[in-house]
Length: 419
Image (cartoon, rainbow, N blue to C red; front, side, top):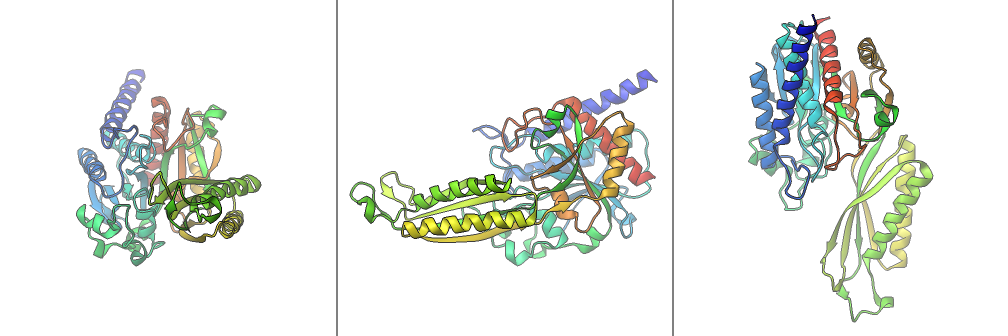
């Protein structure tokens, strides 16, 4: 028995390292970290990697109407309403992000299914490993694009015309990557076949590290959103324009950043201004216009509304003091999500049967699981991140913790698909 288990563990470890290493080789950024933005060459290479890894395990790959990839075990047509067990995450990254965000969930799904196949397990209902398209929204500013488009939470005309900083629209980028934007949209028939979705993800914080646990269970996702702030002043000479004569939008930006921090502190939320565009972006000119993006998240929906209202009020006051015009436009707004209690309880029981004590943790990060939760029983598994850092090259996870997550995922797939 010991030799047999040892062989199984070696197979699992070797399979995970090879699979994860193949994806980690794609999109390494010369400036550090990984950059795989949606519908770019790097993203297409990652999607080709997914198809090859799925094919090596005997899985059939299909692309849905939203551009998401599905690797099927036992075939997509063999389940009626609510029969499919799905696991997965996403392949895209933020700019110069970490190797594990999204990737860990896709790799773990493929490896878990491969392990079940190697053990001779035969599912009674179809299993799918899914790689959702453009979860991060790092190129077009539309997070969880593929999962929300699939479920109908996004209207195609509202998003296909969005442009990246180079002026390329979502529709153009999809077409260049071989997807058909004219067909892009929800797929209620596919969503209706899903009976459960479990997303495994590296934890994007220090909860598990501080508690000394390798894996945890997600309870839900905080409400969150992104807003674009445009401050317009007047371009002028940096040397000859007197301070009282200036209409400098950078002063409005400074007030906006401080207002976001103050509102988040008061409301026990989080707010970030992490992207800024300055026009004309000249060192010896007073800017004409500044665009900045607010990312805000809070424990409750009404708290998030209060934060944005406080932010907007402070920005408008600063604009009035400095002779500016200010416009705040919502780019995305996602309500809070509670994961399925019964599915989460089954995951908890499986983990405890293996001697683990998984903590229950909420998250302020957005996930594809959150987009599916309104229509599909959904749960999340988190794997410990020793650094607590995410969206950064410092993001990491220990191999043994990753394997604990894969084993848990394989166990729940077997229970749901074969029980």
